[in-house]
Image (cartoon, rainbow, N blue to C red):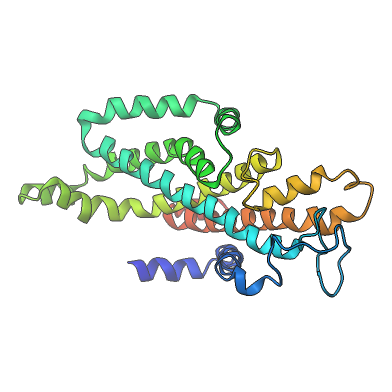
Length: 280
């Protein structure tokens, strides 16, 4: 089943393009110390134009921008992927519990409804403003507010799966709840979880960049958003050509990552729901 799913995914051109871009950034993040030409904290001549020594020039304090960009891949992807996995785990766990064990359904769904009605971005900004700036605090904030949609979707799928004839037959033969969950429920909700993981990642990387851009990120961890923040703070950023080699590369990295996640999401949704392919 997993091999068939992978083969179908590999036939999707958009999915392959998205996966290729994401793999490129992941490899860059993992091997950043070997790829970056300099230590991102090392200082040289400030606001130096791109040259043979510094391919993207230097920033206002003399740090090599290309090295910052490469190490920033680590921070941005870590926050995005870790927060996405945590929120997916919370949402999946609560969705499975609510859908399978009916006694907790009402209570869990009212909490989900509460989180769904809360305007997420303004509240995230307020909480981030009052918390100590750090990578872990950003992960906590994003994981706290991004699980509710996943919980509702997984709960709906579990409600459908637990009433299937083969599940009833398994229960009649004496199978326990944990066996049914592990054998028949969870394997069938994994594709939906993966789709939600991709969709949530797309939102989180944009939100993290936005928070860092307005100064609510961790100033000691150079993410792409913090690079944009530092560039925007420079007085002559828009009346000189500095934006081309300081702001533009970080912005393009954010756009490409979101684009790759979007392509992957489209491909996965077509596999999970084949009816979508008929509409395109």
